[in-house]
Length: 284
Image: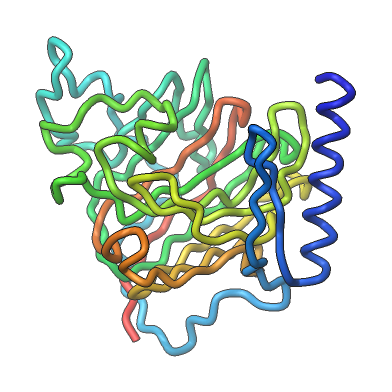
């Protein structure tokens, strides 16, 4: 990294930190000299308020048993999706590997980005929780996709879905609709973005920004929880609200409802381990 770029990232990090302290706005550099400024929706004084909700556990894995997963390429024959992931709990996409060891799931980026889908379709109102331990909390960028369905309303595993190989555009501007949150974001050279984001897809629409409470905070495990209730989304990291947003159902299309959930690691993450993965249905 040259000196100019290093200075730029330091400037961005300082600007983000200053804005966060003020509790007003956050700024990021979006490329081509463009700066994005949005309200800081984070709240370090509290976590999710679940007191008035009735959770029903739908799926739980502590990764103590052999991992039942298939690779995306194994679902294809002659370049076309030929089968659904029946009998598997997970689908791994991208040049990557997955294994369980000593009660943990290990996802490793071998030569590209990865996406790890749970094969169950979850309801519109849900709570997602998992524990994540980065190999290096100063290097990596992780995302969660949820409420994911085909743009035609079908499953992300329908036979008309194109192959997804981990490349980001395939997920945010391809054949699926979903929400996604980037709950931990470091640059490939160790520079902190300083912010967590909520986006709505198709279209990669940045709809909310908050602070990243994981970057540089050690190996963890860090507890991540994502609550989607009606049109409201809240993201929590280690008991603090990172970002929150209410979808008006108009600006970027209707509020997304039921769908699939996936864990994503950008290539420079390298490897992460996960202690557990749980999903509850929730209702007031």
